Amino acid sequence: MEEENVVEVGKITHFFSKISVAVIELKASLKAGDTIVVKGPTTDFEQLVDSMQIEHENVGRAEAGQSVGLKVVQRVRETDVVYKKL
Image 1: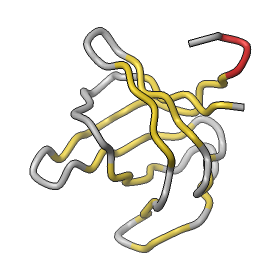
Image 2: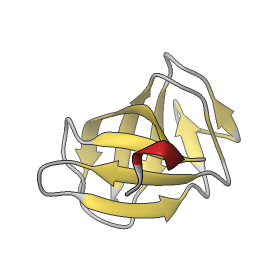
Image 3: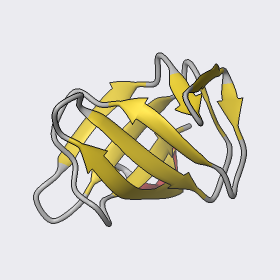
Image 4: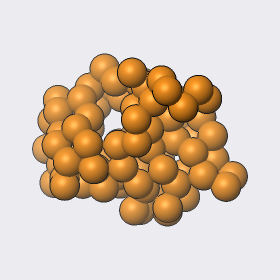
C-alpha cells in the first residue's frame, strides 16, 4: 500500500462475524463508491464500499464522528484501521 494514495478514515470498533459487518468509527467522510483498505496486525485487504448503514438505515455518505455499519469481504478485528484510497 502506498501511503500517499490513502487517507485514514477511521477505526473498526466492532465486528459481527455471523453477518460479516464491521462498525467503523469515522474520523473523515466516507461515501458509497469509495474504495477502502483495512489494515491491522493480521488484516490487510481492500474492497469497494457498496452500502453503509447508520442505525440500520442505508446511507450514501457518512461524516467524521459518525459510526457506520459496513459489510466486509473478510474478517476484521477491533482496532484495525480503515483507509480510503484517493
